Amino acid sequence: MTTLTEASVRSALSRVEDPEIGKPITELDMVKSIELDGNNVSVEVLLTIAGCPMRNTIESNTRAVLEELEGVGTVNVTLGAMTDEQRRNLRQRLRGDAEEPEIPFAKPDSTTRVFAVASGKGGVGKSSTTVNLAVSMAARGLKVGIIDADIYGHSIPTLMGSVGQSPTMVDDMIMPPIAHNVKHISIGQFVEGNSPVVWRGPMLHRAIQQFLADVFWGDLDVLFMDLPPGTGDVAITVAQLVPNAELLIVTTPQSAAAEVAERAGSISQQTRQRVAGVIENMSGMIMPDGSVMDIFGSGGGQQVAERLSVLTGGSVPLLGSIPLDPQLREHGDDGHPVALSEPESSAAKAISAIVDKLIVRKDSLAGKSLNLGVTRK
Image (cartoon, rainbow, N blue to C red; front, side):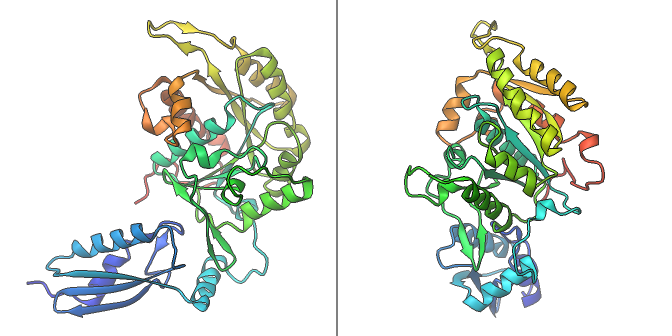
């Protein structure tokens, strides 16, 4: 019979990651003790806080890797909590010695591609588009995050099915909730019930700054920022704090909506941001007999793309058209995005095609080793 050693047990534990941090528990000093009695194993793992929302995941994953060890007997996993000093050490390990939190995505060496999803007006499906693009990318093995920058009209927790989940505080760092393998943060996770947020410009700026700097995002491949409609304070704040963010403009086929969406895209002339492309949402509805009904007209997305190409002096592509699909709305309401729950639906296929274009654009990835398309284990 194979005799277990502490080294073999620790090696197995190195395969267990803290889901919120994305690093092995052995690297984070979360393994307090390993005890062997013959081939029986007892391990104590320290959680960042006693009420860690990922405690069950960490416990089950720890037990699973230990039970896979050849010749192992009984496995006992107990959970404890870090002391204040241990949390401070963890924070320093993750953030370094910087006194003030920095925005990692604004650094010149950042390998995270940031998309600011904008629209000229509300009601065009900007947030549902953001969520479905994010979960579709995460399903391909990319590390993805979402910032709900629509402070007044926050909806990301509902669309992600994470209502009731709260961020975890580790010292002065915020660990964002995770749903569908996507980290996300929203002001909706900090307010009671459906209370309105009544803030003016400086408070909005500070909230976005905290979402970018105080939240521990880890090594993201892609970060989506769901902007409020229009060209107000938040759009300007994002341009200031993350100048390398690329704009994704969402519109509907309707000419009136396209005209307003053009304004949202033309802000790039003042902010010097790149417009990654236009997405036409609520395109034609595919009927049971296969025919298409253009409920909101047609051509709005192409109109915006062409006009923005002229205004910016570059090529702004129409990335795709997402059909008007009742399943998209239904699964948005129940927190299971259509890109995952109904992958063969017309809407999910359109979203997947847009993702194909976003992750392979060579001009956007120049100098960035994102490893896009490579599944991480």
